[in-house]
Length: 384
Ligand SMILES: *Cc1c(COP(=O)(O)O)cnc(C)c1O
Image (cartoon, rainbow, N blue to C red; front, side, top):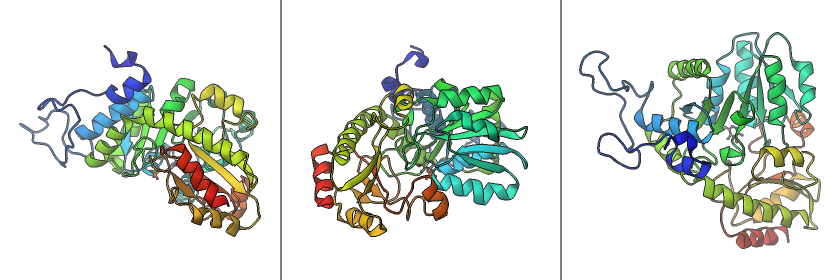
């Protein structure tokens, strides 16, 4: 059966995968080698040097392409290395229009690294896609979209942005880290590039840092591959193996993340000590309709603001939590709590940050796959 015909859950396990050619190993071996023997100069089996290609990485890249309904996958040393590899498509004077409340590390890479090389970035509220148009000019090369956004859980209508991108012959890239292809498949909605921090849900076990890009177009894939090989921030064999293994349970993990996320969002929403809860599954979320249309579920990422105006009001709760571990990152099997203003978004100036709602009191949860009763009991004691 052609792999293309498989449904999503089967693709996470089999997509792009075959038993290993050497001994029939069912799980792709970790080809922990930098180089490959040649019989005559250029006489190799497609692998010459592991920066250019490595069989474990190739297996991961095929799996990535499969689960995102793309054709070509590229695996990088980190999510930011993947983004770096995309932005290097451009030259001084080129412009990129980005979702306003983007991941802090992406913002830092755009503003503090790539602006030095003359690439211009605009940060725009994309919740009403028509607002994009005023930023488009002859130099506009790409829209960079994050949805749901981190940490405000805003939703951008990918189809609507894709339509504007096509009209102006601008590339559309979507950072699909939060949603994962289980919930949302941007290439099917008209995006040209889908990107992941595989460190998060794809890896899923908080044991690896990796990044991914998937595209459909051959010419675009060739350019990205050229940059990946020329710049060199590739995903190593061991890391490729870990992400590949993580992907095999993506669908079951995501199902539970969604169930637990819903239970906790509802618990927080009715709690008298909570001021606001941000989660796209609520019917009164400003873009709930779009979320419902483009996503299969609403995930386990939730942000909330407890009552009180000072940072300490949030810190107290964070410090009391026991089952939710205070740590950077998200998307692992274990539940984590974060304080965006001082952690993931500390690199964004306070004024910029607060414009998009990242107040000093905002708390972000990455709801894991533990028993929801235990997670709720932990929140209950921390909010007492
Ligand atoms: C973590 C993250 C990144 C960066 O990925 P790294 O693997 O940490 O380099 C990019 N985008 C989003 C949405 C993220 O959460």
